[in-house]
Image (cartoon, rainbow, N blue to C red; front, side):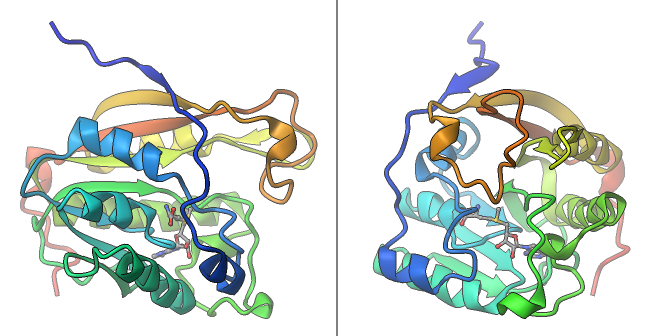
Length: 254
Ligand SMILES: C[S@@+](CC[C@H](N)C(=O)[O-])C[C@H]1O[C@@H](n2cnc3c(N)ncnc32)[C@H](O)[C@@H]1O
């Protein structure tokens, strides 16, 4: 039997975000992921002809990785400036014909149910504490605005529910998340709560751990608080599939 490794050590990746896009971004690209991480997950879970969706598109890393291998890919992003910058990045990479970020709140995706073959995303961090004062759009669904953990989880659950609606039968939703340290030295179990939410709306299939080679001292202190007791070099990949009982759910149908 060909067993998949339950944890994966990724290689450090030089930034794939151009300086002009990073400078214009409201968060200076601090929360942008690695193409190699998405490549690893696409190798495992995507196949030719699939349509891939990222409900938290950001500056389009998932779409870039998917687009470069010829897959049709869409993303939703609630922050308008990021939609523009992300699409510029996709255009510069030459994949914009089949990769596009749309301006939408993923709690209500402008998609027919069962129209997506693979959902692949990194969820917004809890504790990013962005605000409209810094230029971010005042959007009620923006997870980065949540200051109360339970409110953040409620928004996240709405997106998980929508993901289950748009996913095709037996197809996979792959969410990457990490537990988040508090300034006081505790932690919010984001990844574990997300797994619980996924278990409500999808069939949980698998969990895997991604391990990073970087040094904590090189990381952004705004996201990774000083009170860490360890070097925090892992996050979770949570995989769920569309359950048969979800198939007749039409609650969010337009
Ligand atoms: C961790 S970032 C994603 C970064 C992305 N993986 C990349 O590397 O480009 C999460 C993104 O989710 C967006 N977001 C937050 N709430 C959202 C919502 N309700 N609908 C759509 N996008 C949302 C944020 O604005 C942010 O850009």
